[in-house]
Image (cartoon, rainbow, N blue to C red):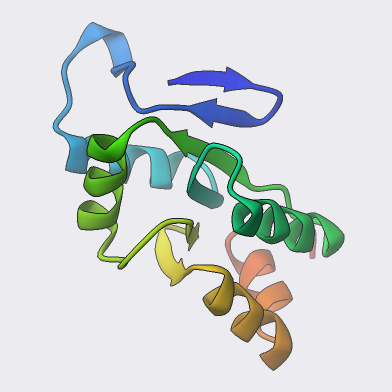
Length: 120
């Protein structure tokens, strides 16, 4: 995994040189940041998700998955059907539809405040 301007690419680097199982790595990455998006490189839906979050004042950590194996691991470990997959405070929100549902219901900003992604 490489960090580039707020974007993390891949899931290959393990902490302290230790090997992690994909499910453990996925869980760790979700816990490291209050708002995480797992997506394919260049995914327009992930771009829209990131833009909406930025518009309300939250900045997501975007982890770009490299290859079908990483995508499968992220999907299986996160219990979500596909990528992009959004996690807020470690809890799965879903994809773009889940994010839009939270936003339109008025629950997005309170949830982001609750997890520390926005100032109160």
